[in-house]
Length: 171
Image (cartoon, rainbow, N blue to C red; front, side, top):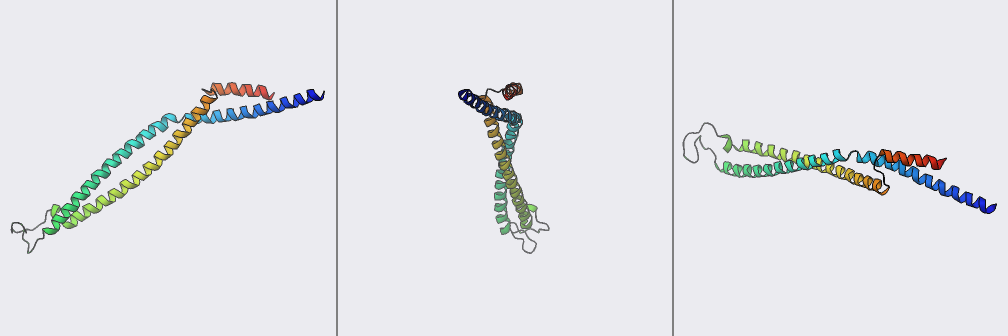
């Protein structure tokens, strides 16, 4: 009688342990199926972020080149000073200075390019943060897929089968 009682208690403990494991599998499987549901969106958003990052990088390079040209132009324009309303190169009368040689105008252009550079840098940082978040989601998706593979669960239908087996074990 004691041997039978001990066997029953051991069986009950083993079944309870199996029930807990199955409950955990069902819960994790449902979560995993939900996580992998976002796979296509995450992949698409990652591609978009990478494309935007490349575009911003190109704009930043163009901006840097333009700022270099403007600084060179500013240096040249600083040497071409109008004295007594006459052109320093040909000595003809000058009433208006071309914007290309106006140091104030060039400084404004440089300032605008500096502001554009700052905006591009902020955008680049924002995209980097978004990319990191998406890569984290991508890792979570890979982990969820591995969990489902390891537990031979391919769909919600399989989860329902495990749930039915769980209910059977509980009873």
